[in-house]
Length: 368
Image (cartoon, rainbow, N blue to C red; front, side, top):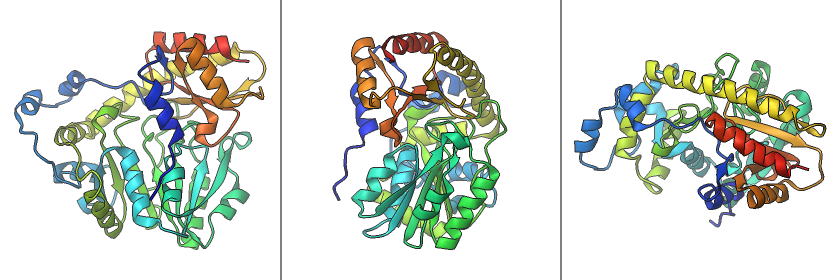
């Protein structure tokens, strides 16, 4: 199994700790251990507990807490993973093999571009269209999701556009998957990061063909503990556990403890509200900044998530433009080509105000 370079992650890991301003991030400003201790994390316990292996599929206590979020589940519907990215990876390892079909929504977080191809799957894409308020191109969708398709991947709320699928679109996607005998993998890691709209409905419960992945990295603002999860049919989750045994074995013991605190109802809502206030402020800053750029730039204000996806009219390739900004301004953003759509730039909206404003000022110096 030879996997191609994940271009966006390689670019970020190379430069994000080198530049002065990193606007390539994608989550809400992270919380500290002190803030988590105010929510109930026992720091004395953490200092004194032996650093043994944890339960490999997540402690029963954490999976029980997660079951309270997803109606109709038990602890057997969950596999706790090292981040949502591992949850997606294990699902792909479980379901995909040589010759089967995989359908990928674009633009998107492109982890599941390279992984399915490394497994021998035939990858098809379908676009979300800005001129349709980031709803799917249904003709492309129906071509991509066909009788050979084993798995379909969407992110909702979407990375990088910050859009949320309409209820009608969700129903249409699920119905097509059922008709074609495909599983739907819905990455919902941004659920809870809504800026000014109601809570995004989960795909969970819409069909027994639905698998949901999520985690603490984005809406919760706790990326460093690397906790994610798979929610799915019990037999499928058990197969993912088998894959997990041969990859990272188990989540970190302290991370599992942090997650048990974070997903408690009162703490989860507290973290979501913290992010909402920050994103409302920063979206206003970004909107005003775009207005000041003049003609040739447009974006649909994100409904959810710590991201903004800016369309520009210049013929300069997005990677070339991003490299120029990084080199001349020591500021990193994400080129649209790394997200499956050329002619766009992705910006982080989850940081502190002064940091965002200075980063945007530097980017504007290099925009055509």
